[in-house]
Length: 446
Image (cartoon, rainbow, N blue to C red; front, side, top):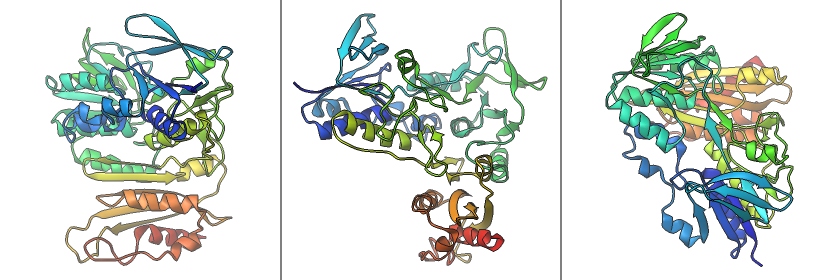
């Protein structure tokens, strides 16, 4: 009999799992179940549709319906998994018509992702308050942009700042409010975050850090928010205060939840329930530097976890021993990237890091059009290993972050990085690579 594989969730992790499972087992019956009315799409692109850099939300859909037919994948849209019964290897699902069905499985992959958090703020359910997680969420934001002049974004993480930048591009007056002490608190140290903060304010976005929103004010609709007793007028409020992993299906079935709040998994993405795997924003993995449980909740991690889960669910063998959680974005023509540990995080996990930082140009100093780039490197002095870096500049940030990622994964020491042979040409690069120069600055301190 053909193997039956059921995948709960048809986002990046779920579709990656399905495609990988199909490559291993050509005959398996593979079913994808998703609550959304759309097949897999890029959530990361949503802010850029709001900013009109991408024309339509439909452009974010990763594969046409023909893809699922070609791969012989049974795609169930607008269908919710309501109960997992591991002893009988059945998952019960409910369609939009309310009918409950039982799906048998030999292997189950839970790729339920995460849901946007609603912070405990008075007035959070008023008309004009929006989450940012799905196409439906952002279609609501799009409709309101047309009749709004001002917005408050609660949360200065990656998504919050990307949406704030998009709303500014649409000519709204934008204020960002962040409870923690600086913007991008999970990605940057305070000294690097200051550059981003100044860039945002220099482009007309008001940024308030170290304070929370006391209340969303207005009758039934938003008229503003209260921060520290002062009212900020706003026609709309965007909640970008993080996400919570969707783990209840596994929790109720007796599966283990890890320290991160995500589903605990092994290196093959197997859960504590026999025959059940997990991948994506709901699944825990390991930080390859610290060896501790880690849930970066990034698309790059999701597709890798999905691939491993899919191969193993189909009877193959694949592992994921850890991830770095490297990230990059662009905010109003400023590129921001990070790989490995920040200085603050390194200290929290017990390292005594040495830091090197440099501001350089992206092209030869005499060549027109070069842009500033700031590189901060974190080195562990006992081993000499590079364990992290943050890079901010007008261009050429992404590939430098990738360079850092490779250096960390290969365990390169600061001494080895300082001797890397890099390229040079006036229109595209200076003699001295800024990442290498920042490492040399750390070496001087060591």
